[in-house]
Length: 344
Image (cartoon, rainbow, N blue to C red; front, side, top):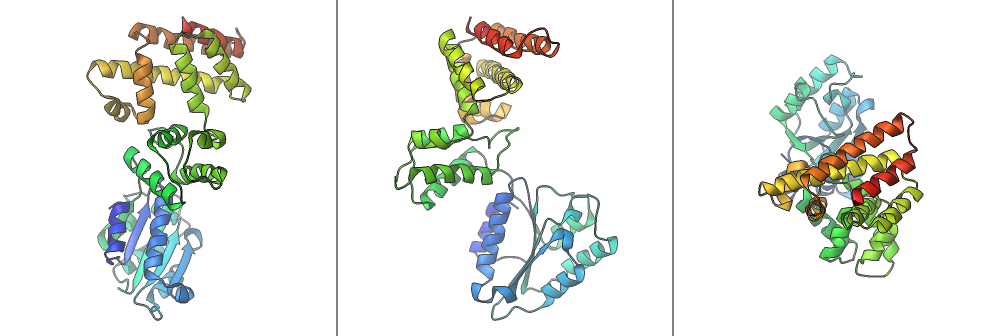
């Protein structure tokens, strides 16, 4: 099951007795735990009807005792275990007999108790204890949001904070994030932090404007790359060199810049080839694992290059990389020569 499935169970008051919530998007996992807690546990009797354990400190006897204790002035109680690493196949600090006892107990959990394990990004599905969750309880994988889900999440979050945002400004926020795509590094916690900074900067303003985002976003590197490539695509050497110097003066490492530019040229080449096969921008984004906004930029930029030219540029990147590492040329000079070559 997924995040929405558990939300549906909460809404329909059909919360089960045993859950294993795991996945890349831990933010969603923690959100589910909070929602289950808010639904089952009254704040008036939280000390009596809620118990939280850390996986590394978990004593099976204490856990079973907590589960067996009847809820006070309530229909149900909640027990949570965070980061129980025995589910991952790592070196286990719990004995095999402890795992056997837990597996046996999963089939005997009182209907008044809801037992939730959460906090892990991955699990080892081969382990008996993991299989026991599938047999006696429910497994929920909180995967990262797709593009449409992320946009909806951001819109709801901004609305919850009492602000409004239009489509163009939402696109700017998305372009500053590194959440989508195969190699994305951010989670929803990072996205939330970025939005919080924008909202804090806005003060009493109600509508999110482009300058609010540009002023506080720390993830401007990708946007600077787009601007540099736009200048290169327009064969504007002066503007391209200005963009390059801005990026380098901001403290970006030469090799990171070269790698990012090389990857972007690869994306443009792949985009050009896929467009010739009839792919749309949205299909290209899914095919090569990039954000739809990035794909749309690649579509535009691919029109300024032939396939042969793009392949030549990739070869130039490899040659300059070798010359820098072998000490034959200064890295900054190499980067400047590459930009000039790209503008030809």
